[in-house]
Image (cartoon, rainbow, N blue to C red; front, side, top):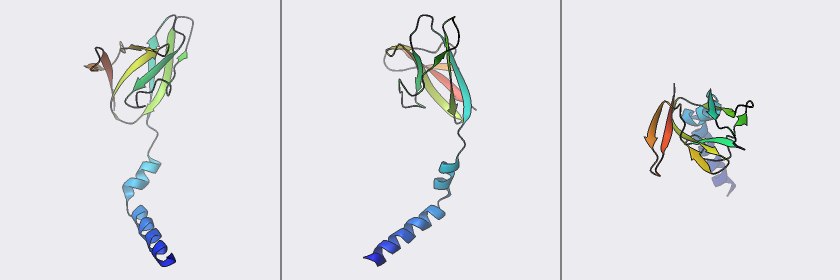
Length: 117
């Protein structure tokens, strides 16, 4: 039994040593900081939600940045194309007015498109 277990560990170790993709994923850079900003006067909470965070309503909350109703947060993103929306007060989905482009979300609204280079 120990002999089989030892061989399995040796195979697993050799896979880790000779698979640079596995090691590269562990040491990849955190990405480029992207600032999301939205004017939402009267909002009690705002979050940015997109395919970069599994469309989570809680992963990337935004902070009020002044008394004028501006909300902001920074998210680190790798180069690529992302779809996103804002969530106001935990339930109202808002299309980003200043996105690079827009695409139908299939639910009667448009997702914003962000291209990170």
